[in-house]
Image (cartoon, rainbow, N blue to C red; front, side):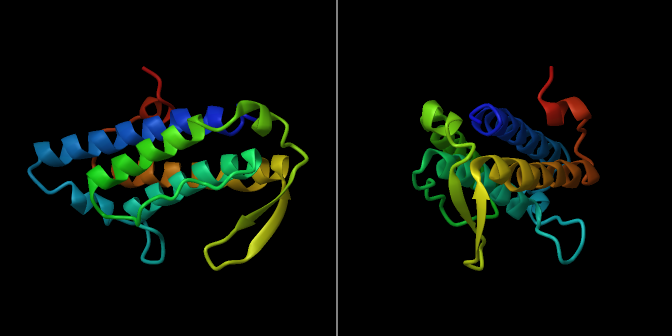
Length: 165
């Protein structure tokens, strides 16, 4: 359970941070404000890049916190600026790495409730939370962030997403 949550979220959050750095470098090379990238979206009713990053961090922090039976870290309000998003990613990584491995590993059958933004609580076991909600949601948002940057012209390839050198 620990490897399927913390062990998965941490490396991909680090990769997400590198993707943002590449976006900044791309914008600086082409002489435009990198914050322009943060407002990009695939469709009018989709979250923009900043919100995709915010949601990836939310799923990466809430699920392991529920498994460890503790409160998730309070992330600051989402800002549309690169430094704030990088700080959000770093805070998320620091928090989930601090969670107790033994409690997370023992949480497969734990009854947990994931709260949606509208306040609705969805019931899960620890295992189903990860497999049917948090991991898919996390990867949806990280993938969409990658796709938005790539669509903007940032030179990215699959190994940037995967974190392979």
